[in-house]
Image 1 (tube, rainbow, N blue to C red):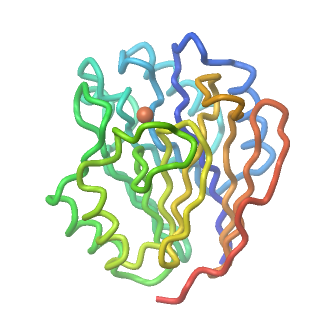
Image 2 (spheres, protein in one colour):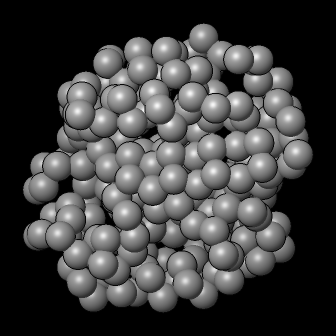
Length: 245
Ligand SMILES: [Fe+2]
């Protein structure tokens, strides 16, 4: 069983630093790679306005990929954006079940604040979703572990520690996130925390570059390629075998 996932994040439609050439490159990579699933880990918009969601929706619909799993980011929860997200984009807690893989999305946002929170009322649902066989992937906007090179840490989910505990208990294999606009991978007890950079903007830390990731999962073998969305330079950032449950 083989699954290919394209992971993009922090699109920030309507931002002054949104770059349509980067968006074109994202679309070209997705057309070339033909993934089974596109995961978008939040911040589709800049201020949560309806017109921004509509622009993001047009872009995502234009990718021509049937399966998409999209969670909101802190920017999407601004200005009552959280009240239109489900109407314009989809469920805030989506789930994808493929052959040998389950991907669960979490809304980690709170209205009009930048830090994150999932909440204990969702912990049982995480446990239950991942009770079956196959690779277990969680997707949320906020990072659960601080990312090197991103300065003062002030927006990690307030219940990050408890969520890390749930990930361990539920045997989560991969956690996908965004938010910090810098790509990074942590391996914590055999669970891989993969943070994507911004894919379509120049809202970048220092000289870092915009990018997206392609995950290929075959049985329990995982390969992650990071593709820079400015010049399509590509590198393998992770090749590993996921542990058995
Ligand atoms: Fe964010």
